[in-house]
Length: 274
Image 1 (cartoon, rainbow, N blue to C red):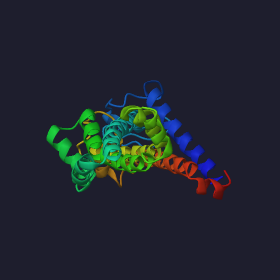
Image 2 (tube, helix red, strand yellow):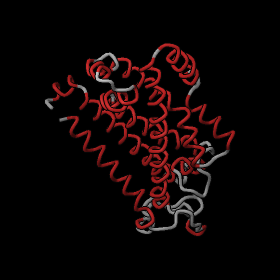
Image 3 (cartoon, rainbow, N blue to C red):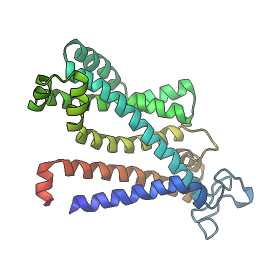
Image 4 (cartoon, rainbow, N blue to C red):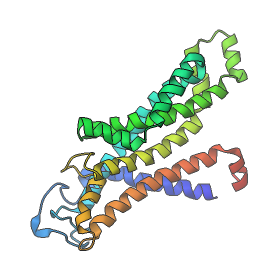
């Protein structure tokens, strides 16, 4: 019951954000970059549901367009990290030996020794802000989590009977990995990907807040939070609405990850009566 409610909440929130991102040009009441100095720091009203910022830009419109940036970053970062991490994890776990020592002991541990957000900040600071650089920076710092997970799953799966049967029938390494091992380790990887999207949204907002994300005048939730710092007391709505957008988006991915994890765990399914 709890898992069903959590799943519905997560899917409903994600659907709202996806629709906002896809339909932003049609449902946004104003141009998110249009300045109107005569309408600075207006509180929420019928004309501006979420109010305006210090340059007179409509906050609702900027949040709708900001959903595009956050979801593009989340999907892109997780996609790149997942593909690269799966390849590295499969090589290390399936072949073992010196390949496992090189990839797991040296390469993965080297990346894990550096805090991911600091590595991303250093990468973006070196190459400059921009959407592509943010995606690459977060993917470079995030692939190792997927590689470690895939390696552990492949180590366990390669000893199973179905792998030995496929090998006895003459299947090559690539066919065994693609047709037999990867489909059987997909569940925990998908759960990790859902949680990774939440982390990517939060990391993009952090980089944008620090001035290292998508440069203005692009509407980013992190940029909006940075702009609101100077108006915490005279215009708190500038902080409240983008902060709520970040929180709800991250929460929806976390809820989805929890629901997927519970549905994949037989003990949890029995305890909640699924």
